[in-house]
Image (tube, rainbow, N blue to C red; front, side):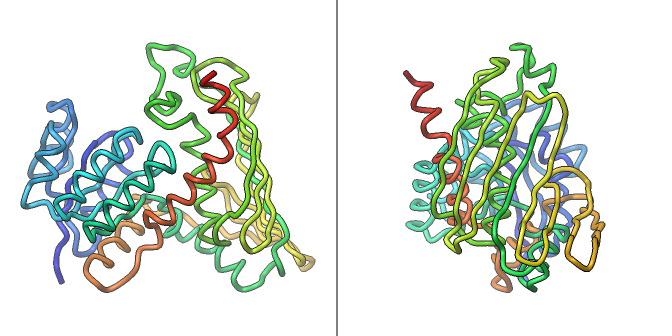
Length: 330
């Protein structure tokens, strides 16, 4: 069995705990190189995580002959560029979510990988986490009967660093992130629902910048219908007075309630009563999905999160934000 040697382009905060150690701890996997534009920060990361090589140039890491596969962990604005760069020299790519700034970029990335016969994976890691797999199992086993509709509610308060232009995070700068917190956070839930129920076929939405704290949308509402006929509604507000993270899947015989981000148990409610499932996340939440990537590269498994599945989620978000984006350009 081959050990897949990974290189990370963009070793920022998300790689410190969520993903980076997962490449080191997964079976038949090792992390051999990291890159950050600030060389001192790249060197510091490499030393702290016992990574043999560090770079301040992405192209150099991608072309390193000792790097078998590339993890693109930069903000979305650079996903397409580095994916195409790795595909051109035949190296598999695991790219952070959201997959790209928009669906058009996703299509270009998929086409480049198809042409080069290179696999493309996307870090929608909830597809491999036990807590969310439990939800899929409950649905598949018919625990709540036939599914009728889904509600998504995510409300958060404005953070001080978002208001200050000097400290504003890139996640609320559309040119870098593709949007605001909606694009960053809603993507996780929408992709998970795609995994459980299949693709969304029809979607429409409204968005606005009500608080004017940063350039991106801060409120979004949407309605959607899956190919399976299941209907759904969602509301995402990031200038709320309090925080709320609640999703509900409602069927003919009960409902499943769960959080996308909070550490809350999965709750099954039926006529027989209420059952809660408390399932902890692993220390490095991307490790289970990384393992599926490594296994597929070794010809012994299948990763559930690909460029094709991830592009569908970006398409959904594009449809929801289409009117808002067109209006903002005027």
